[in-house]
Length: 119
Image 1 (cartoon, rainbow, N blue to C red):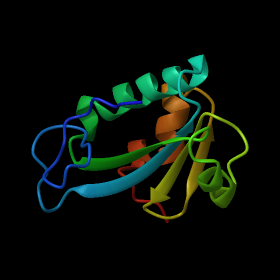
Image 2: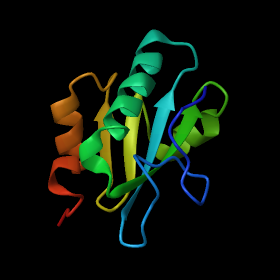
Image 3: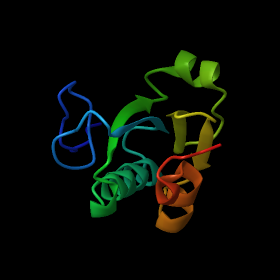
Image 4: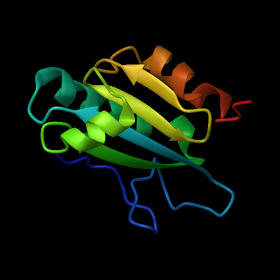
């Protein structure tokens, strides 16, 4: 499964443009089942959220984990539903379940609308 986001200088996908030193970095993991309709929708929806023009100050590193190919990783993370989006950093860890179709809820859960200033 591939994600087509522009790569930053480290090779990690970034939301837009060239990353600047003061940009906020966010690490996400998307747990999916390769080829499952909801997993494919979640990936497409996450790509659209990350490409949004309001998030130019955010560098996003996204790991896509196919749980069928990585069952041990699934068990280690405690994920019980796919698709699940996990925000690893910045802390606190946040989990969003489902195909990520409700953009507003996903953005609020991830802290995008707050600039990732999560207390």
